Length: 149
Image: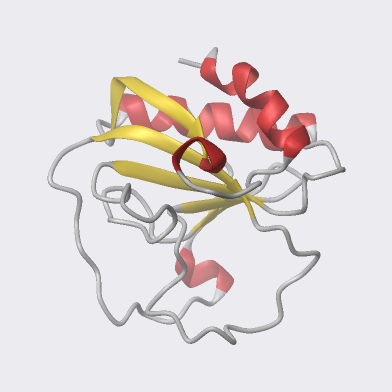
């Protein structure tokens, strides 16, 4: 399973200040949206980007924390999950078919490489926290991603 992946080095990420590895394959996947139109700098001063992967509307996948690393994306649910954010605001905009296809390919790659349990459970961020994330239009598309297993 191939994924068009832009590595941290390729997109110019700085090294994380701290990095914890997952104790086993991820059992859950949490889908997010960035809810912003663009990003210029890290004004929040986080240790690292919170998501494991980010997906652009053109289908390009960007490595965040990457495989096998504990993310900082869903409070109380990071120790056994993978966080994937689609870039954009999906309160009103629909995710592109290219982005959804790339997420499906990423999930298949995670299973085939042993980073995701084959029986993983996929959630929208709102399923696990008091938020509107990943936006109504992306949340409505989650059944398409669940069928990707």
